[in-house]
Amino acid sequence: MKNNRFLEFKQESSLLLKLAMPILLAQWSLTGLGVVDTLMSGWVGTNDLAAIGLGSSLMLPIFMFSTGILLAITPLVAKANGRGEGDKITQFLCQGLWLALPLGILSLALLMNLDWVLVLLNLNDSIYQLAQDYLFYAAFGLPAIALYQALRFFWEGLGITLPTMWISFTALFLNIPLNAVFIYGLGPVEPLGAAGCGVATAIVMWVMFFIGALYVVSAKRTQVFCTLKLSKKRSKQCPEQLAEQADKQMAQQVNHLPAKPSTKGPSLLSLRPSWTSGIRPILALGIPNTLALMFEVSLFSMIVLFIASLGAEVIAGNQIALSFTSMAFMVPLSLSMALTVRVGDGFGRNDPYQVRTSLIIGFIVALLIGTLLALISYFLRFDIVALYTEDGSVILIATSLLIFAAVYQVFDSVQVTSAGALRGFHDTQVTMVVTFITYWGIGLGLGYVFAFKSWIVEPMGVQGFWLGIVLGLLAAAVLLSTRLKRTFNAHFA
Image (tube, rainbow, N blue to C red; front, side, top):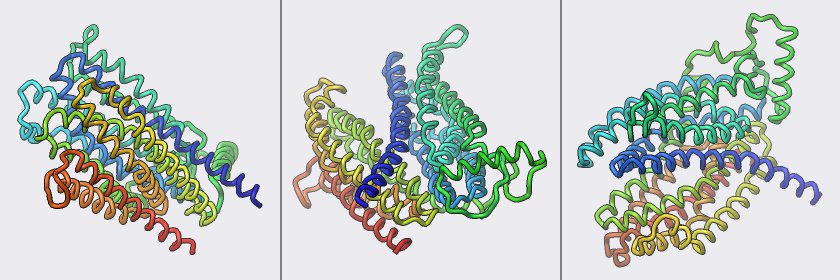
């Protein structure tokens, strides 16, 4: 009995890591795009570097808005996959693409009309124009990246994550020569500086979409949901069985069925935009999810605004600590996204044992990850900061902030893992409320008090905000894990 349980735990942990590792590498690759843009633009001039840094900061919340909504496709597909409902998977794929199109166009329009924000920042004429040009050209890629995200979250819902990794690698390596051509100029292409970086970004986004679309229509595991008419009959098959059935259906269609489409179920090309069958379920999960992401992203953006008056050294030290912790956060985030798939699959098959096993393994791994990141943040903080700067004042500030980061790493891992599991249960509204209270109410509100007021302690400056983050993430970890326990019991008690 113990051997069987050990084997099941080993298999489940292997599945989670198999899903999570490609997502992690993909997230790091996408983060690397910004690093490459920053490095290559910096060689042109300080104004170009400042323009791209500013433009990237303005583009991030717009990008996250559409991404957070479309991320709902993953748990919906995972649940349908667990139930063996191939027709619903096709619906969510198609309706996700229909939804991604207006989201992408809206993102394009918003990014092209941020002149009023640039005016408010009182930039010099050169940086203003460069940032405006960068945003204008980069905006053309946002419809493509929205469509790509719909495809990506579809195949990740099926438990397929390797394409995400390889496409992200391709984007990273393609971005380097494209930046070189359009930033510095080559042959008939005039050097465009920051604007050229926007052109390269847009091209990379469209390449990612076309590669993703090619994969979906050509891979055995995914093409069946584009070309076959799947039965609406439900079954409790595992993803591997569903894939085998899809292969058999494909072969049967090729060898025995007429070319005329069957009327048993929908196909990707025949589905029109439908509010009830796909768009409403995606929005019902996606809107609370994207608001939760926006609360987190805006938290750190607001902190930067509040500490602007504290001096360049404080801003630089905060940015270094934020840069490292953002990269570190990708590790528990990737586990969270993998757990969404496993919980969604078990939820769809009404298998409490699998879901419980996935949750136990997920939280064990999350605690290990959080502990490891905490140890790295604390004991290697001087080495980490030395990679960014040699300024003694900045080093002192950044290393002090990494001590706070070491304290909250475990809490952060637990809260993001809980949020991912709740997505698997299609529970995102409570996550939205909890993140608003903990990130804005505790993290930002209490952090502001610690930073600038003497109501509780003497003003701590930027360290006060990071203390607020520690307390906010602690509260989020407690509240979300408690909600997860209640949600599990409500479904499987």
